[in-house]
Length: 86
Image 1 (cartoon, rainbow, N blue to C red):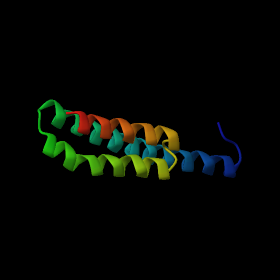
Image 2 (cartoon, rainbow, N blue to C red):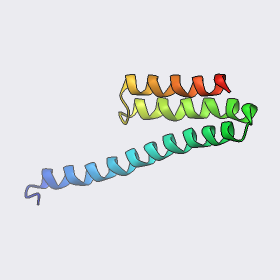
Image 3 (cartoon, one colour):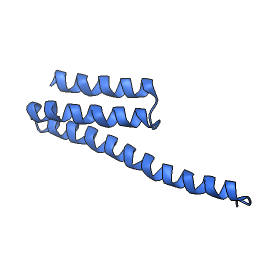
């Protein structure tokens, strides 16, 4: 358990950041899954419309430090490849 006030504050800050990071990851996951569901249903137009939202979620997660740059690039590449392949 933290003893000093600065350590206690660091724990509070860490918890707030954790909640935000979880929210970012959830948004990232949900947009990717929605895109995959649209493709599975055979709705390529809907998937193409969802692609910018998925890109935005990936970019925001990268900007906030939830994802590393190369991981983000890989995810975006795979999403684009999925949409163009179907």
